[in-house]
Image 1 (cartoon, rainbow, N blue to C red):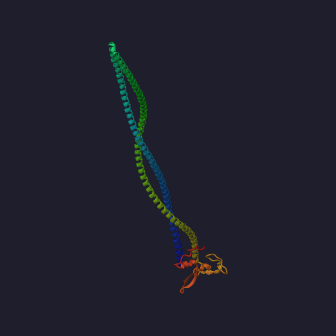
Image 2: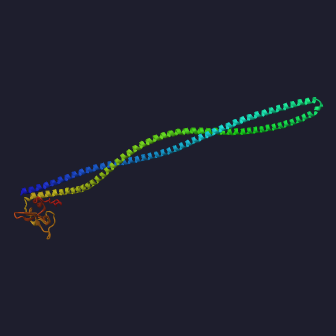
Length: 406
């Protein structure tokens, strides 16, 4: 009997130790999962930080791209302005060349006209002088000849009076003709003088016009020289701007290449971070589920631990009862126990008393609802949960579903 109770006590203690080991193992797994969850949360925070940095770098790259596009637009505007200025300068240069050629031709033509008028004036003056000399010589010669003839006739005889009279008449006619010729010469001279004065006036007008045109041409030449200087300045500015534009375009191309490379790197990094974040989110979701399960398991384990404490206390009481039962009667009298020794329910007419066929305790119907087959004829016997667990090796512990009452 004593060895039988010793085995029962050993089995109960081993079962209690296994339950304690299982609780310790479960707590260790819970701690590992908590540590893993903490590590995953730290990785998630780091990924979120990297993602925010990537977004900030992406925004900065977008700003750089916008600045580059604005600078390209400004450069195109400057190039268009430079092209328009070049076209305008070339047109002004062409107009300057045409105007210069026109005034050079006009000036040469006016100079030729002046030279021609001066030459004609000199010829006219020589012609007038020659006519005056010829007229004077002719009058002198005629007067001298006629005077000599008239003196000769006056010294001769009267018979020659008629001849002298005829000579006088002839002389008179010659004088009249000479006077007419003189008058004609005078009129011709006056006409020539008038024409000469008109030519002089015309020459003066032409000279005035030429001087005015010459002054205008000089002013225009000054303007053209200023335009030429401005054109040279503009061409120098154009060359400098073209050089700066080329340098700026090369810089923008290099910057754009770097920006595109940086953008591609950011995109790849962002995709990697996004994938990692999705993976971490999935792992976090899985961990949340596991943590929730672990919380439930932990609560269950805490309840189990609490139940094990009660069980341990119950087992201690039962152990003491088993130890003391060696000095007591196995079959306890019903009248000594007004309530169930297991669940402490009060007995009544309807709630009758029963004995465990193995330990002999007075119990209620529910506490002796297990049946074992013993003896040479395998007769069924009602036993309590504790005795059933001790007698049937394949059965689950009687406290696996609920903690027994002490």
